[in-house]
Length: 188
Image (cartoon, rainbow, N blue to C red):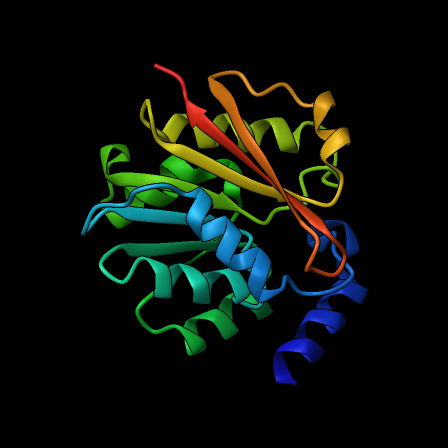
């Protein structure tokens, strides 16, 4: 209940930053974790916009030997994530600066196995979505995955994703609202 209140309170204050009407569901979180592909022990899974931690929880469960780094711009969410997941590295900052965030943690891009995003790229202002996508491609090595979920897969056609090759899309009907998981692979 505490997480739901936090989510709705922040949604009311920062609609464009959150871009959702409800927290992600467990089925969506499992689908996203599976779409990340193989993650070797000790590698990093980078989560962008973890919010209340529904997907974070699944990443921790699905990849117990990986290091999870969660980048969150909303202080209230970041504080709650740090309390809930002491083993997760929570970074307070913008996803457009992933190289700086990882550098500050001493993490080389070679160690990043996958980037998972719950960011509402369709509702973010100006060229911020393209800055974030450029930041993602900057820290992913060829063959590694970027996974993004969206509530409007058709609107994603307006995004250029240079350096990222689209893979399969998965519709998750058992989520409110239904979502689509988009998977990409970093090109060589």
